[in-house]
Image (cartoon, rainbow, N blue to C red; front, side, top):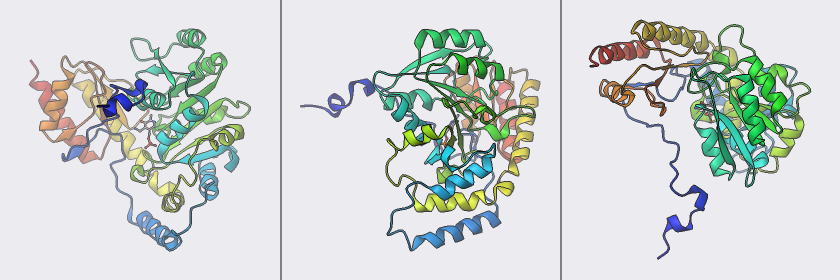
Length: 360
Ligand code: PMP
């Protein structure tokens, strides 16, 4: 009998799906969400916006999501307009559409590992060959080394991630400049965590004018505390946005999603007011973990990667046993923890201090 496994595309056989554990524990600091619930005034306006579209759900939504894209362009600034902004169900869907249009069978995508684990998974799902680009021992990207890897593999799409997940550090501007120069195809800068960057960090948005192969992806899942709504977006040349129309499913963004996101964006200032507090908690974790004698990667994001753990898997387990879920990102000796509320960070720091003290 033919099994489903025999029927599956051969290039997908034996692969593992994305699988951050969703465990029921008191302190969840494993998926870089924003721990702060939506403020009442924002929630009330979103409810009103949703109520106003409910009776019209018999009709398909605006296929182009033009109003939402205009709002996103206004939020981003940099002279962007609706023709240069595209939106989808999370930036994961944006990344998938990019690879559907610019990757695919016979094509190559390259990213510098470790970076966002979904980049290679979406490459696989779209039949795009993935090349694991190399970082230096301290997780930095060396410009000359990056250029050499691009010259060797001639990727159709290069992924950069700034601030990088899971390491947390923003991309050096000289690396982006060299990659833009060396890459023969699209350069996608995944800026899911841009709003958390430290003072002085420049977004790749500033480089967009005149660079039609540069794409910057963003999300409302992190700084905007809107992960459950699923809203990601990109800024790029209008030709890139046009190309994505060939692969996007018609009416991919529901009327509910569009209405909720627009209502949330109208309160951007209030929603983003948690960013400073989250950065304070992040920096508190950096100081405390360093105080425990653990190496910590400098972070521009809402999470911290820390190492020096002989058995990181066992440390992860001990933290779960104490009710604190953080992320094992598959980097031996290292773990990643999201900057949550002050109380969540207290709980994490109490737990990790106890776990480290009990290490052999
Ligand atoms: N890019 C990066 C670097 C991420 O860490 C994440 C979420 N973990 C995403 C994109 C996707 O987020 P979403 O689909 O919620 O926008």
